[in-house]
Amino acid sequence: MVCSILSELSKSLENEAKSLIKANKVKWSPHALTELDNDGVKTDEVKTAIDSLQLIELFWTHGFNSPKCVFYLQIPGKPHFHIVTLLSDDSILIKTGYLALDPNKFKGDGKTRVRDIEK
Image (tube, rainbow, N blue to C red; front, side):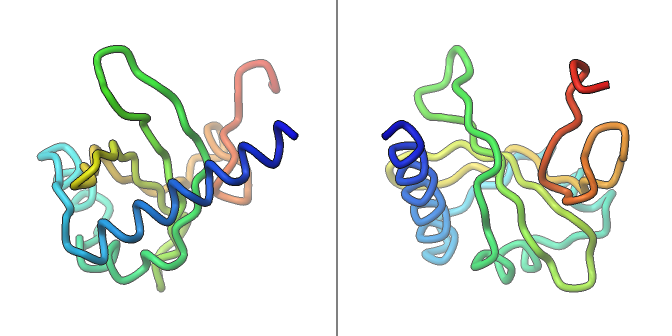
């Protein structure tokens, strides 16, 4: 039962994020814009790849009224890519984005983090 609840929550958050991005209700933090630029990724590339969006992490941070979601995206011509977002009822804030390439931080699938307890 717990797995089905989590699966439904994941799908719901993915659909909400896709809907907000497709409706152009996106806010980009200055940090996100800098990180995307450093990785050679354009905001339009993120928007174009939105149908590949997959929730890979979800957590609450003290002081925020919404969950922080880490999504995996498949951007054509780019390696594994993540965006970190905050969702609200009327917009999505992309806090950062980054290529998930470091084998000390991410497994080969580009989605799964390597945790210290796994080393």
